[in-house]
Image (cartoon, rainbow, N blue to C red):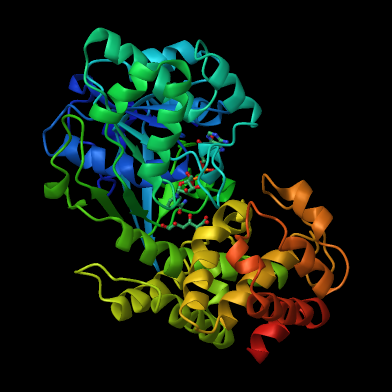
Length: 485
Ligand code: NAI
Ligand code: CS2
């Protein structure tokens, strides 16, 4: 079957939305690092909206810092792909034209550095997953013993890490008398802008204190909150779409109708008319970010481990169980008291909307996908809430069950005894801790300072609650434990 290309666009069925602007006239104004599914269903769609509105400065050059997969999917398709928006029975299809090409950084690091240094590039967005920042998840400090980061600290001639690429390109921009770009982290990490800025300043400072001072004074690393559920695409998704399009699209992404992007209003240069496109610009992102991480993502992670242990494949199947819904509501009751909701966020309505989003059966969002990289996710999703609750002398029962399920997951065996691979940068370490009875495991895990802060490790109440739930999970399994909750 032919591939989706610029020439194929004219032959698509009338109900498929098309870019509608002259793609040849589009300039590259954005470089995106980590062009996975989420970027293609979120930021790239807003840049596509800007292009459709007639501002042709915002084409996107994608880059992969690791594999060539997305390059190989998009290159034969002129960068085109389909955004499928699924809601129950309905599926809307829109072809996104914003992506102009994909660089594979390990093949040619210099090409990515030069692209980032281009005078027309004003914005750099990043979705490199939590682990791509090379930061300690608890303290946010640079992992200087990471081999790639150590290499970038030595030399930026051929960068390997995202902070390394940004720093190398900013050095060239400074030499050329260009303004820095605005670097927007779109990963689910707390204080994402501050952390990215700190990583870049640390690297720049190691090479050239003058460069670090220039970036500190003129650069912009706004905080952001990003939200849209984007499950990984499957081979079945591609086959079904190809039958509908009559051309093959290997780069398609599927998502839900909901989308939200809150950006701190701090830019180093030009930007699209974000506000006109429905992006929220604000002085204070933290309250939005905390609400999203602790409510949406906290529930997601807890459901991923409990559901995954019980052999439940998808999130909508988890929330089809009344006991799981009660558990999520209890978790949200605990999280809610720790929030300072921003003006404009009605938490009760937000919770109702989240539950409906989780229940969307057309999304097919795998518990296994969300379970990935838990060591990087737990601190901001569940543990920060636990700290705030304990500081306020409040209970942590539901959070403790979520944490116990994560610990149980590290053993790599589900409740039916089936083995699975724990996909996490700390998997080897956590596997060695997940031995013995509940008390022994909790004792061992509490010394894992990359995940559990002193405040929790030293809390008898936290330890006791996690141990009690882990004991139940080990003896009765996740479903029976949820039923007793
Ligand atoms: P994906 O698996 O499709 O893409 C991940 C991207 O990150 C790939 O480009 C990969 O090469 C890159 N990456 C992975 N490890 C890296 C490393 N160590 N260094 C540099 N790059 C690395 O995943 P997806 O769905 O695009 O999600 C990526 C991130 O986007 C998530 O981790 C999360 O922080 C954020 N996000 C995702 C949402 C979703 O529903 N999928 C929604 C909100 C945020
Ligand atoms: C999920 C998120 O994979 C995960 O860990 O919790 O990617 C979630 O889908 C998004 O944050 C929704 O915005």
